[in-house]
Each structure stands twice: as structure tokens, then as C-alpha cells.
Amino acid sequence: MHRSGYGAEMNYRATTFVALVVGLAPASPSLAQTHPADLVGTYNGGQTEIGTELRLEANGRYEYYLSYGALDETSKGTWTADANGLVLDGDPVKAPEFQLLETKIGKGKELVVSLAVPKEMDAQYFSVFLLQPDGNVSEVQFPEDGALHIPMTPGKAPSKIAVAFSVYQLASQPYPLSAGKRELHFRFVPNDLGKVAFEHHRLTRDGNAFVLQRFDRTLRFVKESPETAAKGENGAAN
Image 1 (cartoon, rainbow, N blue to C red):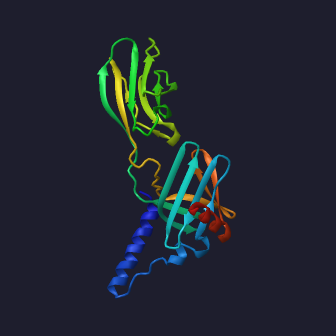
Image 2: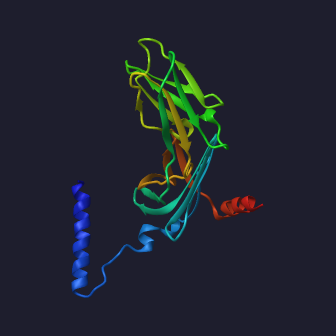
Image 3: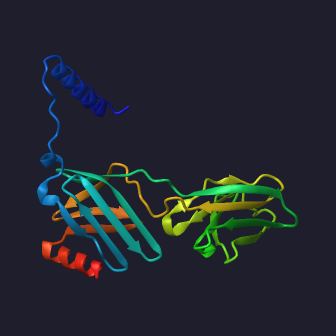
């Protein structure tokens, strides 16, 4: 347990209890302290190959989006500010999942891995990671029909596999390949794919920018002027 955080929580509870006993309302952080008016607005973090925006509302809510190649993600939730930057806490989302539907004893000297995806998705964006007994890892992309046939070379047969959607940095748990297990059939369930539930995620202040590390890129969000923001909204409306 983090003792300093625990102590702060106990101090707050004690202060609240004393206030109740003497008939006083406990003090609470004001909106101005946690959501400074000068930070409210729209921030652009776009760069080469990336379109991204962060909007901070006066009521403590935020909206965020990112478009990066084949990847699109959004997030909504609450924001707070301190001397070091911003902290985002996203609304709950249901994470995507890989479901193992069936395993079979295979025939021949090959490993068969199939993946069912929704009609609007392309199986070729998914892949299988193969963990070799020596610790090496290789990646094999699914073909269009979502069925992989991997030769099982003696002495080099994988000991575990995981199914992945690398664009979104998603992967299943690793599945051990026991003796004779040669066919595995998976299904990808998108759920809230593309929606992010930031959990007390910090954007560090750097001069006039707030910095977010996302998908191996450094995003610098700089506040737009009211005129620029208005033009962007009008363009979107048109």
C-alpha cells in the first residue's frame, strides 16, 4: 500500500468527520482549482501522419480523438490539472477480446490457427505470435480467409501462441501448445474497440504544450486560439 496516499486519505476523512461533528460542511476543492479557466479550450496535437485533438470543458469533462493510419481512437471522461500537467480519467469501456472457441487434435505436421472477425473487418490486420522453445518470437500475418497453416518443423515447433491486433496493440493471452494440439479456432469480439478508458493518465506540461505518449509517438497538444477553433468547428459542420 502506498502510505503517503493512505495518510492523505485518512487526513481527509478525519477532517470531514470533525466538520460533521461541529456542524460545518467540509471544504472541497473548488472548480477553479482543479479545472483552471485558462486551460479550457481545444488543443491540437497533429503531426505528420497523425490527426489528434483534445478538448477540455469548463465542467471538468474532456473529449479526445486520434487518427493514425488505420487506427482511430476516442476517449471521453474527466480532467483535472495540477502544477505538472493534466490528468485524464476516461469513462468506462468494454475492452475488445479474443475468444478461444475450440481446440482440436490436428492431423499432419502443421499448426492450424483460424480467426473469425466481424464482416466489416479484415483478417489480414491480425496476426499470430509464435513463441519458440528457445525464447525467440516470430509473427505470422493472417491471410484474407483468416486461416493460417504453419509447418511444425521438428525441434522448432512453437511452445505457445498468441493472437494479436497489432494496429491497436491488442493481444490475447499466450496459449500453450500441448502435445497433439494442432488446431485452434478463435473469434475477435470488438466490443468498444477504439474507445479508450484512460486511468489517471498524465499529460506532462512542457512549456505551452501538454505531452502524451501514445503508440510509440510523442504527441504535443497546443491550445488553439478561439479563431482557429471556430474555423475548425465550422469546417467540420460544413
